[in-house]
Image (cartoon, rainbow, N blue to C red; front, side):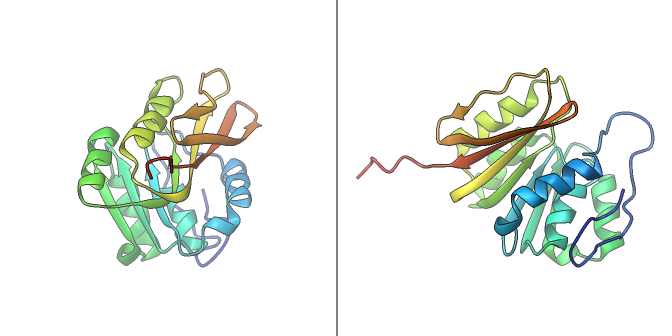
Length: 186
């Protein structure tokens, strides 16, 4: 597993040993970043179910200003951040994604790009999109990308998160949502 482009291009990342973590394949990660390329420079990036941290680290390599990594076990994320020497641009939150989201909102954190890499078949990807729609740790126009197994159900709209694009890469599907806050309050 390597960083595909940017400042850390070609750097190897420590991958999982055994089962439990399924990193986004390099080819799919590169396709993801080709899709959101213009949004990355200067972005505040949130990597949920971060695993190895490869997606958030790719964002930092491509010019994101800061990345927050959330996972129940953050050992690999911390190790890979150390390998790249980018700790000043990274924050690691170890624990449950939903608890972490509420904490980030309480702290006033907002994000321009969010990636959800929930375990396949867990039902956590749509639940996480719902939580983001409800809690709204999102800047206006933010993009949320949910990775799912092709047989998993994920709908086209979660309140202010509206599907813009859905692409399949073998058994992996990326669904890209745009945060469109309701401006009818005025």
